[in-house]
Length: 229
Image 1 (cartoon, rainbow, N blue to C red):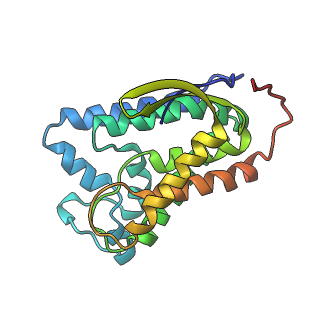
Image 2 (spheres, rainbow, N blue to C red):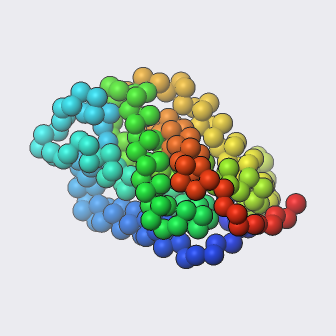
Image 3 (cartoon, rainbow, N blue to C red):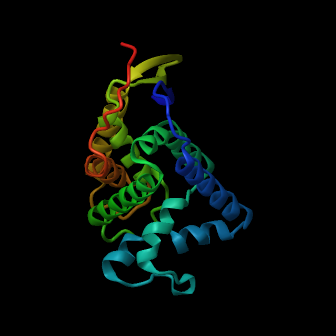
């Protein structure tokens, strides 16, 4: 399933959402333009679990603060489709969560979800020497917040049935709940892995953090929304 748009209007301009998308794109294309420096940038500014858990730098020639890599890794992407997929989800769901929290709270919320995502990935793969990069952990937090705030929202979704493709409106609770279950199913077999691939537990950690932090930051707004059943 690929979400395309939702039916919940935003009442404030999504300044932070647009800024985050722009920043992620600018960093990606800047590193891409550096040629061979692209891979070096991912190693230097990505989060490497082994470095965090052992307090040592594996590549001293690419020295960068280990704690700060937890932040910088949120703005790096390993490829165009990695970037495009993450930014699509942020664009669809970020504006409404930002609308609920306000610009400043949303930015803090986003960063904290990203940190929670990274920490759970590190806890489950403490000896991995593969850099973790991507905004998906932070965006997973946005998805968690959206699911509990707008469970009945209709998400226009591209669904594949073998060779057939349909676009249908699906409740957010189903779309995002199904997404989270998939992350769990893939996450548990990856515990202790030292190879590359998707940081499934980062998605799980970000999603759960988003649910908790959204309730902490905002509770439930008194603003009323009307859904098409």
